[in-house]
Structures are given as structure tokens and as C-alpha cells.
Image (cartoon, rainbow, N blue to C red):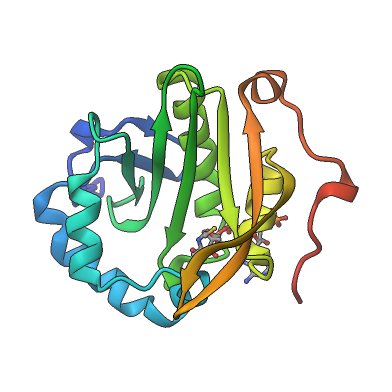
Length: 201
Ligand SMILES: CC(C)(COP(=O)(O)OP(=O)(O)OC[C@H]1O[C@@H](n2cnc3c(N)ncnc32)[C@H](O)[C@@H]1OP(=O)(O)O)[C@@H](O)C(=O)NCCC(=O)NCCS
């Protein structure tokens, strides 16, 4: 008898589909799964400055959405609907800027499997093609090699350093400013080897 595949969640509100992940907005009933993943990933996420309590993080995540100047999606496994992480677009600005700031995290247990690489390219496409963004920015701690490699692979280019940009653990921290332009995305421009950060062994 053929195996029956049971999806944990119906993909009714999926906004973008990749090979292994899809993006969808959060629902109130995602709270338990979301907070459990954040709780289990606390030590993994803390060095990047992601430290809000899991419940507060979910509340804020749920509140953001169309009409708030933000967008956010859960990154879910296409195989079974499991929540793997999240991507958000913040500070979405219209005329004359047409820009947004992208943020993302993956659950510790799902890291280094290429999931966020796929999710980021889906979110980037949606920002440029669906939301009319012209300039997509990301702010990264200089030591966050994983995030910088992810951005470089997606075509983002390092533009410089924003000094004392964010307060983390009581101290203001410099952040690298990375950005991708709609015209470079449309041309499929990818960074040169020299622009890509070296992998941490
Ligand atoms: C950054 C992050 C989202 C990457 O997610 P991921 O699903 O592991 O990413 P991928 O598996 O698609 O890998 C992306 C690239 O990062 C590299 N990478 C992933 N983890 C790494 C690590 N710990 N050290 C060095 N490189 C790493 C991968 O090798 C890959 O590089 P390549 O394409 O050149 O081979 C994840 O590490 C994370 O959630 N970190 C904590 C939160 C965070 O930093 N958010 C961003 C704040 S700016």
C-alpha cells in the first residue's frame, strides 16, 4: 500500500516555495512550536544579539505584518511543515527610499543544512518583486561569519561599518552594513571571491 504523507500544516498561506522550505506568515497557533524552538536555540542565537524571551519574541513576530512597515515569515520544512526558523523585513520604507532591512534566524538543530540560504533567496525575491523594494540592507556583527557568508552567497555586498549601531548586553556594538540592490539582483550579480568572507573552521 502506498505510504500516506500527512502534512503537519496545510500550506494554504504559503507566500513562497523553494525546494526544501516554504515561507508563510505566523498564526497564533504556532506559538508553542515557535517558542519551543527559540528556547532550544537560546545559546545558539544569543551571540548574534537575539535574546528576547521566546514568548515576547513570538508576540512581536505575530504583531508585525502588512501595514506595520514590517513583514515576517516562518521558514517551514516543505516535507512536514515543521518550523525551522524565521525571516523578517523591517523598516520597509516607500518613496523616496524604497528600502528595507532583512533579519533572520534558524533553529540551532537545523543550522548548516542550507535551509536559510534557500529561505533568504525566497525572501529577497519577494522583497524586490512583490514589495517593490529597491535596496535591501542587513546589519551584521563583524564576527558573525555564518551570516556574512549567507549574505555574500545571496549577492549582498559589504558597504562599511555602522559604529555603535546596536546595544547588546548593555554595550553598543559596531555592525557591518551589507546591501543588495534590485538591479544587481535582476542581473544575477554575485560577489567576487575577494568580497566573500572566509569560512570559520
Ligand atoms: C546565520 C544563520 C541564519 C545561517 O543559517 P544556516 O541555515 O545555517 O545557513 P546555511 O546552512 O544556508 O549556510 C549559509 C552559509 O553560512 C555558512 N555557515 C553556516 N554556519 C556557519 C558557521 N557556524 N561558521 C561558518 N560558516 C557558517 C555555510 O557554510 C554557508 O556558507 P557557503 O554557502 O559559503 O558554504 C544561522 O547561523 C543563525 O541563525 N545564526 C544566529 C542568528 C543570526 O546570526 N542571525 C543573523 C543576524 S545578522
